[in-house]
Structures are given as structure tokens and as C-alpha cells.
Image (cartoon, rainbow, N blue to C red; front, side, top):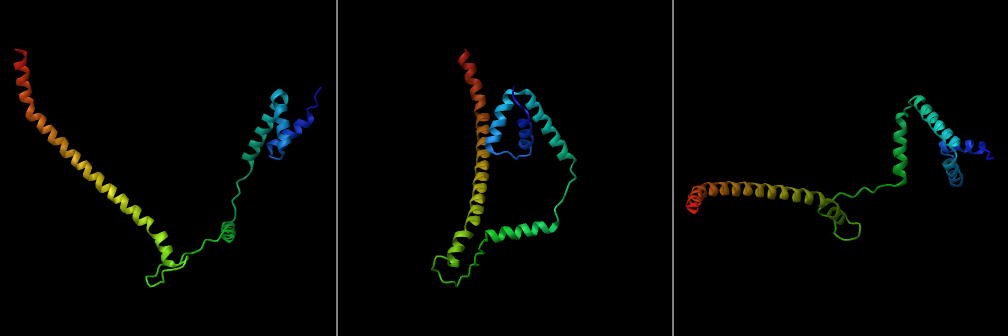
Length: 155
């Protein structure tokens, strides 16, 4: 006969996230074949969810965000690029001219491409609309002749 007490204790640890990989595997294998322990796990999970809902909402102090952001900035400082100056010497790897070229042209280029696409699309739409109206006019002009041809053909 299997002693279920160790598995019941593992269920509590599993629901609290405190099992190592070997214990979790052992518990999962046991729960597949033991309906009683599986029911205990479901009940314990429901109790944990109910406890979580009963806990009062806590809000961190306002100062916490500032201290966290300060710690993040200290871990990975982001260099502030030097502003572009037209008189700066073009040269070395870190020159301000090269930084300006690398970081300042993508946005205006993307805006220019988007504007060009909008203009081309509008022009194509206007052209298509004109072609459709011309086609409708041509069909209207040809329609009487087609009717006469159809009458003549039936004779």
C-alpha cells in the first residue's frame, strides 16, 4: 500500500512553487494514477486562489518607482549622443557628424517615403476613377450600335 502523506505534502509545495524539478516530476507521475491526491491538489489550488482574492490590495509607495528606475539606469547607462554641430570635425569613430548621420536620417526618410506613397496612391486612385468614367461613357456610346447589330443578326 502506498503512503500518500509525502505526496500530500508535495502538493502544498507544488502549489506554492517550492518544488525542485525532481520532486515536481515525482508528484506529477503520482497524480496521474492517484485520484485522491489529484483531488487534494485541485482543492489546495482552489484554496490558494481564494486566499489570493482575500488578500487586501497593496500599493507600493511612490518613491519605489523612482528608486527602481535609478537602479535600472545605473545598471545599463545609455550614452547621450552629442548634438550635431555643423562646424564639428568629421573624423573619428565617435564624431558627432557620424552620430548625426546614423541617427537623424531614418525618421525624415520614413516620413518622406510615406508621403510619397500617399501621393502616388491618390494619383492612382484619381486616374482609375477617370478611366472608369471614360469606360462608362464609351459603353454608353456603343450600346445603341450593339442593339442594332443584335437585331440585324437575328433576322
